Image 1 (spheres, rainbow, N blue to C red):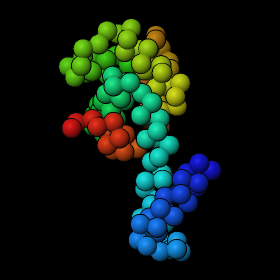
Image 2 (image 1 turned 120 degrees about the vertical axis):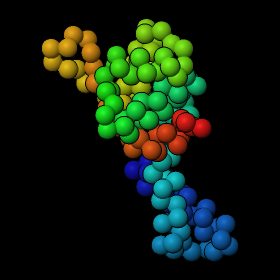
Image 3 (image 1 turned 180 degrees about the horizontal axis):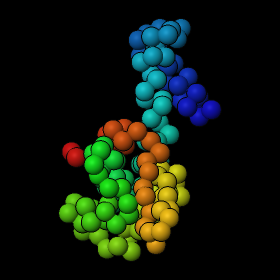
Length: 133
């Protein structure tokens, strides 16, 4: 529903910028990607800098087919990218999970190890978090 309302809003703004008083399919098409990313963009903007960096890092790792996305492996790779303690890392990870940006999946027989799964497209997440820039 929110994406639909955002699409209507953005399409009208696109038409107005073009000096038209009617919204066409072209205006809708031009506004579609922006409207689809608006909820994710707003959520990412609510994160602090380190949380955005962590989220972008997870997205970047998820694009590597050989990457291990368990909490321990991501923590080890994150330490090379930014200084962080495991407690702080896990608190930020839980927040991303609570905000429905990722899923933490328990692995049977692996103790407290969790697998991290993105809920959104990794390339969009990287772009919106500014990861790798």
